[in-house]
Image (cartoon, rainbow, N blue to C red):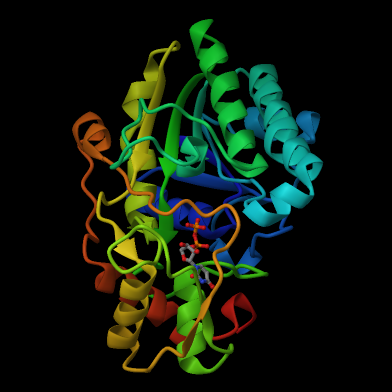
Length: 329
Ligand code: UDP
């Protein structure tokens, strides 16, 4: 398949490009490099420095390169910022996705793979989270993803564009060879911040909330290796052949891990103490989010390979150790 990876210079997109190559597909990358990194994409991959909202330019790229499938990873994803600047999020995550879908229609491309999120469930009614729980996001970021899911469902119903929607839990880790990895500016995610606290690059890690109704009082999350996520995106291709397909899957390990357990695992993997201090809860953090991934296992024949949090953190450590300043290193 010729696959246009929109946002392919970002964290998850760049790992997906690698997995597509490994699986024998031909990835091409479109990224405006607002948050993406040119060095995250190998020089032999066709690269278009273009804005996904530029419908006519994108349609041209789709046509000229005989694209079969579009994978869409390009979104703003800072939950706190989405609360203070909702229009920025609706404009980019919803508005520009509509432009991308219009470009696909212009070019006659009919298969779409979309990055959604467990944030669409809000505070889940029950755990582990199954796909048919009510979706009720508690922040604009989650709302933007849910709105795109609704648009995709409507397009599939009329046989215009078939879609696979993946609701990610906490994407983590890095490529096994340490050549690409997680590099956000600003960084807000727990594992890279804990590694930076261990190496002294940043000050003590703040544990956001120690009074949650969880076994050790800190939040539970489901940390899924970025390569495991990526492989699911490729396993779904067959299902997109039906023009009315609209499939959705949770992508997580199914295993809850607390913030304190992450810090312990980072200490074990790095051999360094992680200085940490207790801090108030962060607004908008649900106490527990972890997946029931039965549907993805059965529907995709997919199996996460990194079930052990230390193996996931080991890959993150390899990347951060070799590239303490991310791609600037
Ligand atoms: N967290 C924390 N300190 C930090 C960053 C994150 O205690 O400096 C906690 C956060 O409250 C959440 C978990 O770590 O419970 C994972 O947060 P992250 O931002 O990595 O991902 P999220 O679950 O928000 O998508």
